[in-house]
Every structure is written in structure tokens, then in C-alpha cells.
Length: 132
Picture (tube, rainbow, N blue to C red):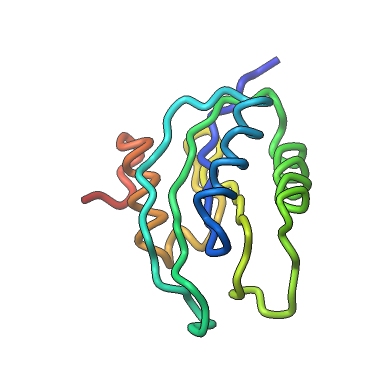
């Protein structure tokens, strides 16, 4: 089975230290964490009346395919108390998104958010995305 190299974006603005730590532990129990980016505070986008977010990314190796990993991450979000609301930019306990799959950017938000580019650059500088 082929191992896939994946960058997962991680964000939270509801008890972020607790939820990011829980997410990392759960991901590590099922996949190999190769590297962890810096985590930074970012201003909310779209809906401003909420706490700042803590954002970063994980570089993992997984044997799951993209659809399987995406479904697994959504289940983990639900387990950690993520509530889907009408406001897609609202507060959240955890947000887990596949940003890069085997060297290819697969999330359009990477182009819109500097902190995502910076996290990817920190984990995979050879992709030439972002930079400090």
C-alpha cells in the first residue's frame, strides 16, 4: 500500500490549546506525524465578532486515500465537538483540512490565507509556496 504525504491545516478558537492537543494526539494514534509547523494567532475572517484563531499544520504520512482521510478528519472534528453552523466562518472547537496531498495543493483557501502558505512552506519548503 502506498503511503501518502499530507499537510493537514489545524485551527481552533474555542479552547484552542486543549482541542489542538487532542486533535494531534488522535491523528498521531492513526497516522505518522512527520513534522509540526509553528502555531500562530490569526484574526477571524468573514465573521469578526469572535476570538482569534490558533492555526498551524501537520505533515503526516498515511495509508488512507484522500476520501478516506477526509471522512476520518470530519469524524474527528465531530468527536471534538465541532458544530456545523450556518456561519461557516464562525467559532469552532477544531478545523481540520487537507491542504496538500502528495505535493499538490488541494485546498483553494491556501491561495487566500498567508498563514496557510507559511505553514506549508515551513513543512515542505521544496514546494515553493509562501515563505518567510
